Length: 153
Image 1 (tube, rainbow, N blue to C red):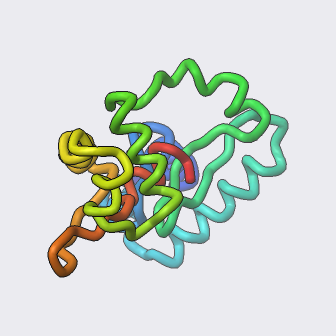
Image 2: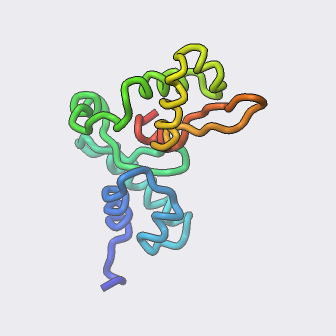
């Protein structure tokens, strides 16, 4: 039965079922396509296929990973169905500021948003939307790959 599988459809199914963007290593493990060159070729064929079809779906590349997504204007019309992020409004405000000022120091955020910023940063780290790395007497705050995938930026 294994020999009868259409690997293009198997890769398509794996991308469809993945809850987040998926890299070549994980796709290889899930589909059994061991050649990265072959896997990239299949993905590129699927990208072109969805680009040329009359459908609202597309396969998007996010960094070095791939995921199913919606083409515009459909994505913006139905995005509310996906629900919002499971973070507080305060944390979302801080996250938005971090995104616009990538690499900002935690001390600068506290000056702008006040003491509650520490709680918001903790919440954002727990949700894996940001990373905080020690930098002199403060921490440098940057967004993560999960942030980019989740908010499609």
